[in-house]
Length: 367
Image (cartoon, rainbow, N blue to C red; front, side, top):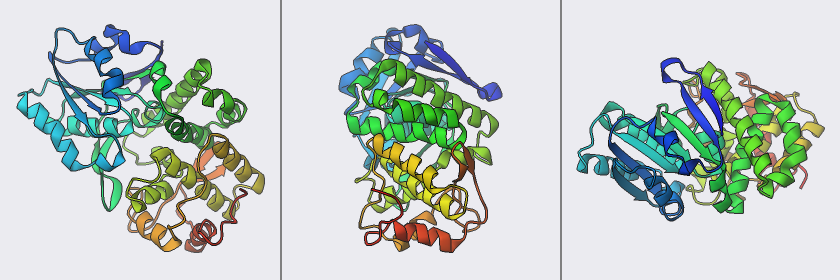
């Protein structure tokens, strides 16, 4: 087992990475505040892992909430079901919530924990690659709104993150690839050597080689922990973690959170961000080709839905948490391994990128 620390002073916490961690009660128990525990999971994860977690909680008073699976259910209405369970059980401010699932469950469980009685402890047990390398780390919690993704939420740090690589054995190939989009992101924004490693080891990751997956998870978490320690509430460098996300969130919102997985939308957005970085004169054709080639090798899409035009993109991108005074702010790449948050992205260049990815003119990148 590897143990990494997210250094946030009094809010610091460990990330445990290894195999068989769901069956190690000491990992859980040291982070549970009282005898009251609520486990929040979904209909897909519960049959696979809920019993394994409950078996480690003997002696606690445990309640469970099982929600529908999927991004369309990441709403205030379904967070209310978590509050209902906490209130019905008469759980106190000392209760602990365990979020057992992918990014949606982690975000919803963390948001509920942040709000219930103004904050109770929670643990993250991510069960997808995307959640293990990204959404479970850093304390971003929240829900979607029909007009924008993750627009309602809070920064609220967990007591710990338990990333058991064994749970990835049950992950379907599409979800695995979706997680790899976030893994690739870390190489692009701050770790060029890791990007090269990914170029050389993508086949092993897709084949679920345990050593390769463990290394990818560890490096991703190290990169994210380093950034979060510098900028907990995204007032500066943490914004670079959103490479491709403004484009990607527009895709998710524009398709009703039903057509592309989050990682798939981010992969497309990363291609668009790379194209725009080239138009700014920072990346060359070979750089963009390497990025697109790696995303395609990871079995990820590189084009948005055909029905989304540039006008819809612009309207949806205008509703983004990084925007300032109505101006769209985008994470771009100075080079592979170096991200930037420029304040001077010309509207004309952005429109060129969006049009080049449109249905009638998909010439921005090679197929």
